[in-house]
Image 1 (cartoon, helix red, strand yellow):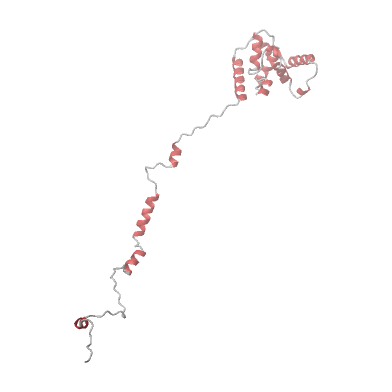
Image 2 (cartoon, one colour):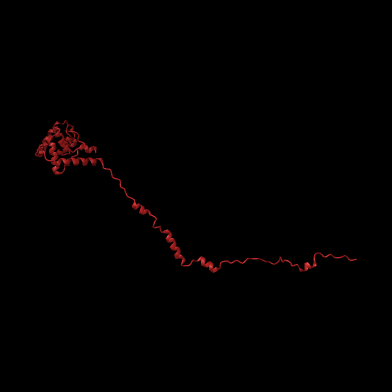
Length: 211
């Protein structure tokens, strides 16, 4: 008896079943709408009308707002205060002495003024020679000074007529005369003659050294 053959599967399904082909290359791709070459060209090279607009926007952004105050305007509006320069003490003293002398010279002439104006240069020289004779040693450091300056410096250092600091020489002489201290009339003669010539020095020499 011949063996029976067994058939595996359903012959109908085998006949109608489709096979998958792995040998051929198949690719499923989705269609994409990419930018065209013309659109890319338009983006890469902006239109000529866009350049002035960009330049105009840059200019507007750089220009300051009219409402904002500028640094130059703030500095101009600030009030500049210059500190007053201090006046030197010597200048103040000189002005005070000059004003004192001016007041004394504007006063009416007294009998002493007329007597002093009547003295001559010879009278003044003899007076100074008499004063030098009273000194124990000649004043070598005053050799280059005039007789008028020697007499005035000697009067400055004569403390019996009061202090000489901060006071005009002519005012000091008249104050000593008012106090009956008998100041030399030759000193007043020197002061008046120097005032008449415009070379008077009313400030004491010791006062100039201390200023």
